[in-house]
Image: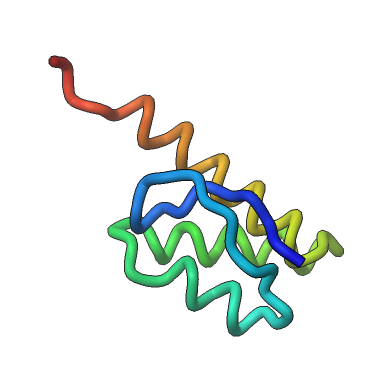
Length: 74
């Protein structure tokens, strides 16, 4: 099964295989300049009972909104 999400490292939307474990999901989030905040948000969502796929989508969307907000003026 695939999920459609915003990849904060590549800064694009993409379809990737759904992570089966939290470790796989966290690996996708690591490496971005904001990775510690992304990981914290993901962990919080998972602790609240959200599924892996949904938590990844929410974290990716939040990061995308942050990227759009702080893009340099052209």
